[in-house]
Image (cartoon, rainbow, N blue to C red):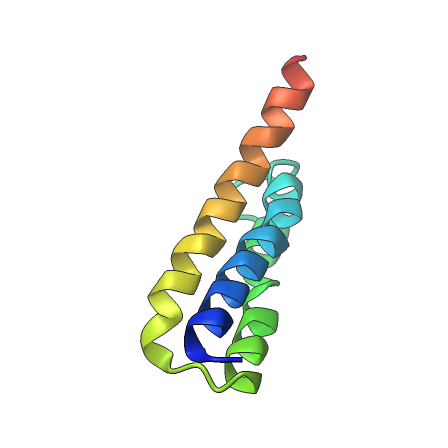
Amino acid sequence: MNTLQGVFAICAIAFLLNLPFGWLRTYTRKFSIGWAVCIHAPIPMIAFMRIYTHIDWVYIPLFFLFSIAGQILGGKLKERIRSS
């Protein structure tokens, strides 16, 4: 696997991994322990994948952006399904 494939794979996994955590985050009170766990639980898994695939640290902001997008979309999907 070359670097570009690894970066793409980790971005996709970071996004998909954060979707359910974004969904669960909407059930918790903002800034509570559960809220913080929903935000931070996927980080070690993404970090492990980056280290395991020997992807350079300069791609961390990209993984961060895809994680945030997954969190936001997960919360929005729950709201959309609830309103249907």
